[in-house]
Length: 237
Length: 243
Image (cartoon, rainbow over all chains, first blue to last red; front, side):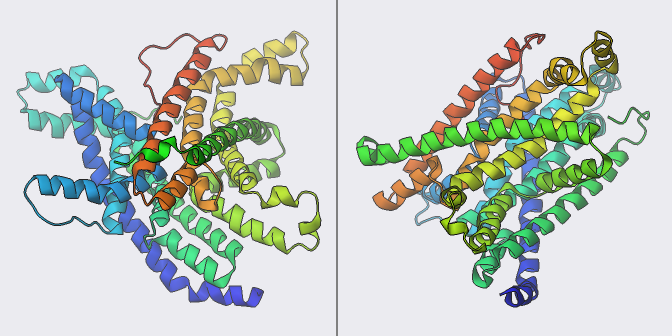
């Protein structure tokens, strides 16, 4: 029995590596989309136009109040019929079908965007108002003010929150296995079931995820040092 | 949209059982997890070095791996190893060791212990040492200083973060449906299978969770404001962000 499970881990190394790659693809894509959604959400929450603010608040509140697993399953099953109905209403015939990868990325990005909205909103609010006024006084265009003042000013405040969200996202990708998409944890489950060495394979899964999160933590620490360049050295909290 | 199953007493009993199990699991995990968190935080600060290192390792692993993986590890991995121990299936604790509730609670307690342990440790460090020295000067024993001064002051400092952790705990409960425990999501899945429905039961559950999160947030906000020495904070977000 022990012999079999030892062989099992080697035999499954290839599929597990593929699964790990898929997991990283899902995470990176959803993070990128989530970042864009977060920027849009944060701008909407800070906009002077009340309906836009209300919409963004409703989005970030509702998404953050419903469990991710539930959202994932719900959108996986309810997404295609809803999109089909919309497409038909717009005059396109036929059924919309979505594959597992797109659902996984879509749902994780949707959830990520809600949390990112809050992180970026807080970071933008923390920029001293004088800096924005100075930009206006020097005649910066709105775009120049956004790219030269708001983004660099916001990043040092946003990086810790963004790093947290990335770590949560990596761990949330494991949920995708529940809708039967072939990523890292789904592969691990298949391996564990077929070799009957559950203890070994689930421990291995833990080690792989741990390696991913620890590497990410180190990278984000370097990134934070980079965006804080030029800031006076403050107390390491 | 098909909601006729809502009036079926058979399905109502499923949903009720799922709801009660969900609440029970939240309460058990929150109580056990916070007790563990305080123990871990104290042991890491005051315990012997090797113990502190072990706890640091445990915390890193629990915070660095997905909860779903931990749940599978304990239920399928450890559960299977326990099955192999001779004589255990005849013993008195076997009904407990076979119950998915036990593994769910175990995983959540360890997880809450690791996450909140770090929060409480940080808060314990932030309490000015002068306050503890004052307690000693008044003749309190170290245990009294801990329970009457140090811990209450620390909890005061990290209460908003701790309440955020409790919301996250509530939101991770649906994971236990993957180890065949009867929670709300599992009840919804059974109804979906039997009624050939795709998403209506899930929408009901999403609504219930939304309501539970809002209620829990309001209750915890009351706790925060009633906690001795806390000033009411205005304009706090309804649902705290993940920290």
